[in-house]
Image 1: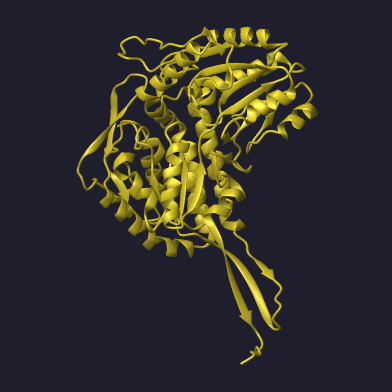
Image 2 (image 1 turned 135 degrees about the vertical axis):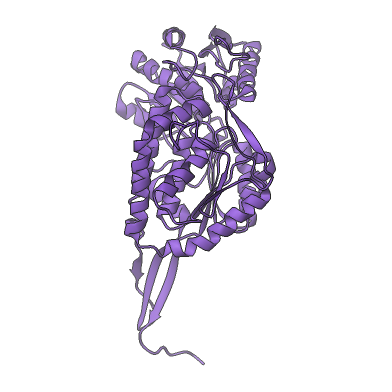
Length: 495
């Protein structure tokens, strides 16, 4: 066993009330490596009884943790951050084994997680209240910011480390207790790893509880648990609607970051090479399995052919293969995701688009049924074709022509989603004017849509979710205001 944080460590127990214990069912779930298709670990198959135990523990532990001085809460998060850095190589390896993350993806994910934890460590000292004047003589109004209570975190499989961190660390820092349910594909780096890190950092028993298991078996109970005060979910819009509805039954606050159909707009005034550089990253990093990746390339007709040719050339030159080798494009998470995206490509071609490159799996030596999909570029695409109107969540670049900026804006906004986007229009001011017209929570000018900074609000509109993450935006989700009035002088009443 190389490290308690490595893939070879024992991960076959849940973490509830500061104890490592078997699931009530006594059964486990295999964790498969997307590159090799081999089982690399087993984790507990948690049950509803385990979920209930986790919430009962969290509810009991939260009050004392909320009363803990802010300096101590800050210290615990900072200690966890130090451990994250100490074990960076083991954690990057975990991401490769569980999520199919390349070295670049692993380093980026770790950097984002560290940024999230560092920002979270500042929150205990920022939970400040205020005084408000009163209309009643002799009354003093105090408004305090207090933790919500128990925060549910349901994290995804694509970037499990940082997308768990951005909810877990702030919630704990702000004085809440947490029940963490990681995705079935990535239960270690998105879940059990957090238990090990916070345990070593000195977090009191019961403040963090981690229950792994199949969403089909325990997901509804997690989302709808009556002890939950906030439900922080990252995932698809379809599942997010169910989670939000379940949370709403208990009047829990939903913090939902859901799907996207992000547009990369390139006008005739753009630097084509710069736009293609951004496009290659925005479409193909982590195999396109990013909620804020480029889902549609909207390119002016005057530069359309040049753009398609250059993007195709870039796609064909990208290293493709196992996440355990030096590569840029690694495997898709599993067969269902792979098959769905390839079906989108096939149906888009049938609808009249041209396959410029890719559109097929790449075989790996010694691996049956490879999950690696070649970077794919489609030209002659329209906004209503399957690879464009659906969130394909893969290394697929549908390129759509437009003739005017107004048409580009109309095409970009012709979706239920509103998560991220990007604009290349040569002049920054021209790009900003286009960005102002896009109905989306985030837009990046002379860049691509994949940006995340822990001190800047992150969130979408429409079908891309409700609520927000990062800094003050998420602090508002996991805390509430409490009004206490002090009547310093006798008050006169009408009867």
